[in-house]
Image (cartoon, rainbow, N blue to C red; front, top):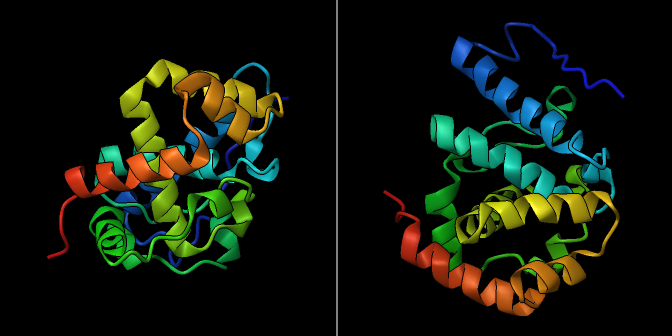
Length: 179
């Protein structure tokens, strides 16, 4: 399978070169992550959190904003907080209004709500900062259809509930407050 990148090139979709570049980074991340061995797109195999989270991770690292979704042309998702996920997510944690991780880990990419896109960025970023090589192994397991719960336990020795507990503490400790 040869990965392809195509996008609606209309001015309405991308008003600036930077918007196009962010979309390119987001979508190419999906392509590269899907085509490591074994090759499979986990976005439709109940691994949307890892697929979208990694794409947002690189958007955030390179541009400091996350405003792309893997199905951009459908225009079915509204931006969450102007793409400034981190301060908004921290505020949700402090209000105890974060969506439960257990509900997010089994969704496909197209099922994620806007706030869940921010959460999956944090989930991926947290796991990568623990050990980036383990995150790569997690991708292999998810593409091999290993259940997320089993993969988290095997690779990180974390139950889903412990993962959420540590993740929320990490978000408060590392993500900036809203302006």
